[in-house]
Image 1 (cartoon, rainbow, N blue to C red):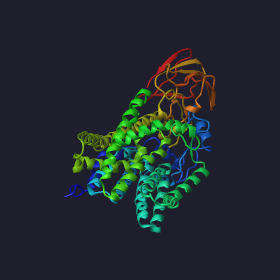
Image 2: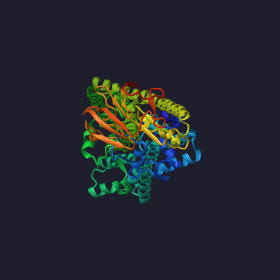
Image 3: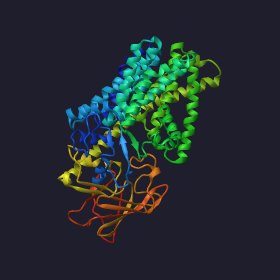
Image 4: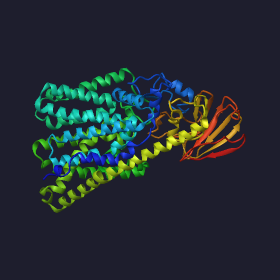
Length: 578
């Protein structure tokens, strides 16, 4: 009896439901609050049901800066616009129907996860054995890359794109075998839906389409190979043209590096991001733990050596498969590598790896089947046998133990973060009273401070003014006079992040000593700054007395709460800690 019959494949989905249960019970997170405001028409600009991923453009940027919803250090040309009309429409319907009830929305996301897992299983079943299909489906379905898209409603587009794109791969592979025009048309339609659902995420599927031609197109003319790319190239080309013509993309952000607008920045960041993503997907290593240069060098060495060993064993295991399975395994492996390229534009994170995990899951399953069940693994030289077993144990632990465990822990972390954020917003709302007329200043906070103003009101209405002075840890605030406040961070620190990954301003456009930034009601002058940490000493001059009873009410974000925190009196200083 095969493993597939002993263990019904759908039981894997039940395991996944348990692992992702904290994610399903998560409240709203980050961009979810902006989407609520857009649906409720309280966002500073009109957004249609198809444009909920249009966060910052030339039209709304001035209003966001005027109200303080973008901080003083935001890039003056910051643009964050993503063309994902299908996922946008699905979110619009959810928020319209369910309002402030996130549970049914998360159940909707979970349904897309189920659909993606079923689509992946259908793809694996085209050529792989039942036991390998079960292993591959388990690895893919339980991977930690799905935790955030389930927990974070705004990130559902990854699951929508993954579902349609995986189905498209299966149909595309069938078209290459049958040559039927209707299969080519259906594949193109499914790829188009993947692009409309996930935007840039779906470009990763092109890696598998290219890999199919490189692996299974030997002996075919160049023209026929090019024809094999058409079902993907046509919808992808149309998407790219529309995206460009309508001005979608990211400008001025350190979190995104557009390869077309900023090719040098993209290429500079690519090597580390490749290593980080390979470590995430093959070994389930969390790249967030490797931020220092020395740690990155160590991680790079571990990942590169491990990956080479995996390739050695994978090649041996693939060679023992029958011809159809061998061909599929080869393009799954190559395609998983090509699929990484489009997501190198974003700071590495597991949520980016859904498409690449299709190939990783298939290849790891083949290696495990070879090392654990194939008699051929016990043949040959002794060292080769031990190497195969060691690689299999490492991959098995990473993908079947640590990966699912990380899925649960990530889900629980997102759930806790959402609850804490909502509780703090409720307390702040109670202290504010009339949100629409409140003027609130944040002396120092974290990234949550940029979503907090949209969370204070059930309809997403924001305060009349929301001013964030610093996004950092410990700072000293010195009151120079009635209208002047100086903030000083410790040596080696800055008032806001200037590293790669900073959402609001790229490191290449950093502010330096002597620079002055003026926004509504306030001017910030950079007194001291370093290349490594950016501005650490800034003098803020306001347009009115800070002790005026009608002036801004100040607060500070700690690790567990947002607390009202008055400024020091003139001539004195006061520390503000996280």
